[in-house]
Each structure stands twice: as structure tokens, then as C-alpha cells.
Length: 286
Figure 1 (tube, rainbow, N blue to C red):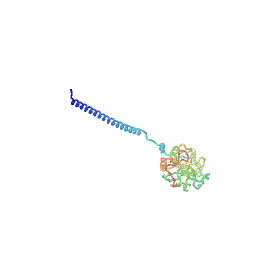
Figure 2: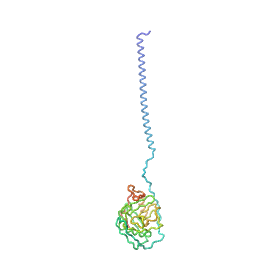
Figure 3: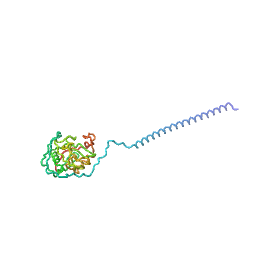
Figure 4: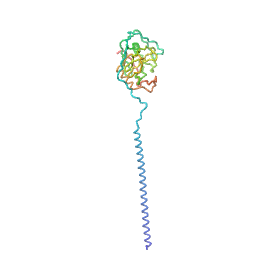
């Protein structure tokens, strides 16, 4: 039989074993808790990285935004159009009438003489502009009265300080000029006769007169065709041609496009050129 001393020692050893087991269990619980915490942190960090990476991939996969206002480049033919010829030459000389316009003059000018106007030969002219010089050849055989008026206005300094107000880049590719008002409404206070004929056609290099819808309503305004104009009816007097150097100037103005910040005067897709073209002088002769 165990003595009291032996019983006390056995109880002490039992208590020590229980305490050791409790400490071991507490230690294991602590390790597991730390592991769970670390695992959770790793999972959350991984999820953040995954979402961030995926978001970046989605953004990169999206197509780049394009502006709805972007316009296709202006396409300009490089070949000149054949210059028209009258099927039958005019009498030489001819008489021209330049009656007073019903509209007041945008800038006062004296009407030219209409007596004994030559219908043969050509006249050299150079339009000096802020965009570059535009040399022209005026053809009296095509339109003697129109050439007579243009030369007279140039020599009076009528065109100096005026600007080209209307550029067309699609369909009718031309630059219209000659209005002191700068909006297509102005003229010299007199009108010139139409000198058109059914065989007329328009294209790159052609110089022609602008007019109202009524016959014989031209004045100082004209247009220079640098590209296509196939749809234009033969109602507009052709009175000359544009040199290669002049076409280079027009091409550059056309490629710069229309100034959309300003309203078009006609609402037909044409408008003021983005590159201003202001006349500083029109010189007659070489």
C-alpha cells in the first residue's frame, strides 16, 4: 500500500503532465490561428492583384476612342482637265454691256469700256495672296467681256484686301473669291454678260465666273477649280486657267480644309477655308 508521501508525489506528477498537455494544446492553437490569419492575408492580396491585373487587361483590350468630328483627307486629282474651246470663234472685236446692278456695290468700281473688245489672245495675271501667288492665264477667245471686266477691276485695285470666302472639298472642289463683303453677297455695282456655251466643262485648272441664278448676273466673284467639278452644269463662264504653281497653293488650302467654327453661307457643305486666303494685289501682265 502506498504511503501518503508516495500519493502526494504521484498527484504532483499527474498535475505536471496535465499542465504540460494544456500548454501544448495552447501552443498548437496559437500556431493554427497565425496560419489562418496569414493565409487570409495572402488570399486577399492575391485577389487584389488578380482584379487589378484583370482590369488592366480589359482596359488594354478596348479599342482606342476616335473622334466623331474626324474627317477623311481631301482627295485631289493630279491631272488637269482639258481647257474648253468654243465650237465657233467669236467675232473680233466684240461689244460688251456692263449694266448697273440692282444691288448696291460692296466696293465702288468703274465699269470698263465695252467698245471694241478684243476676242483673241491671252492676258497674264497673278493673284498675290497671303497663302501664296496664284498665276493665271486669261483667255479672251473664251470670254472677252469677262476678261475685260476682270482686268479693269484688277487695275482699279478692287480685289486688294478681299478674301476668299468659300471652299468646297467634296463634289465641287473649288475656291471662290472676289467679294469685298467676304460672304458671297457683294459685287462691283455692275453686272457682266454670260459667256457660257453648252460644250463647257469644268475640272482641275479651270477659272470661271460665279453668278446668281438669274442670267447675266456675274460681277466680281469668280471660282478656281482645283479638283472635281463634273456635276456642274455649263452655265458658268470660263475665262481662263490656273498655273501649276497656283494649283499647288490651292491644293494646300484645300487639304487644310474648311473652318467649321464659322457657319457656311450656303449650308451646302462648303465654307470659309481654314487657311485664310486674302488678296494683297492682282497684277496684270508678266
